[in-house]
Length: 363
Image (cartoon, rainbow, N blue to C red; front, side, top):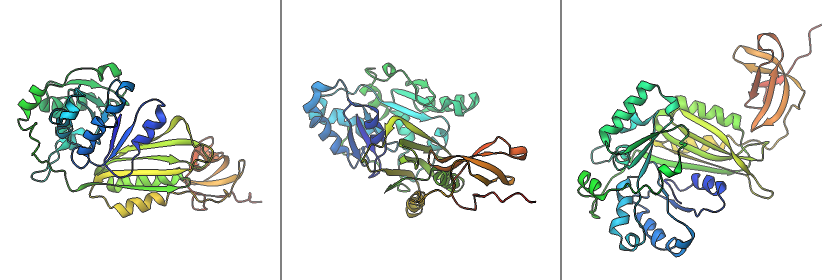
């Protein structure tokens, strides 16, 4: 697997390496369709060619900002690559929830719309997140895709679950179709431009993260910067947990999950890595905001069983601490009075503005 990350700091390669013991992972940081395109040919014809007997095929996972044409071109115009490999097919994953706003986006003059290019060059199109749109919205997405590429097979999925046999050894790439669509496909002197408003930034710190504080901050970002945040993702060390967490978001939607079976090993430095990709990014604001989510290395003020008051939507409510540093959140609290009795909440911070000692009963 050749894993391409747009920015200098990678996240996806960490997930891949932790998910399989046997696969070969080559990481290329930079834009694979321009700045590191030469590196792709060198890897294919060099280090990977020397190990051809140990694998059956190469999967190239590009950044979502890559133009597929120059990548595909490598398999035809580079003699060292073309004599070793055959391009089997191009797979494009489409986000059903957000694709329309991207394919319809007006780019500056001379700048390609990468979303349109990725759909146009695809042999198979995975329409993912179908559970997040209505049937009518899904029909609109399909119509838009077919308007760009009428020949590609469309596979509808949730969480990108699909039989690998539908994606590998499919023998669907047609040079005739591509050159008919793009007569300049084999022209190595051609140039393409990316939208200069789109960029990436990343932040890394050692230690543990307060997941409650991160959740609050990301929610704030969604309200102020959501449309401009195309992708944000990270691998996290949550305070109070040995599990490794992966955080992934697209525009206004995000999720965090435990990497199954993956833990921070003894002596392994706990590290938090986060990457943002978007339009007109305020990089210093994003980097510093993420770093402020670091959990303080101090003892929690309350212990399990402590009687406290927690701030909820309706004001202060009595409760009992049931967990301390619960999956990266300072406290899990069960409320035990009034209309909130039995309700379970989590406190994002450990200070009196969020959770405080319960005052003694009057009288």
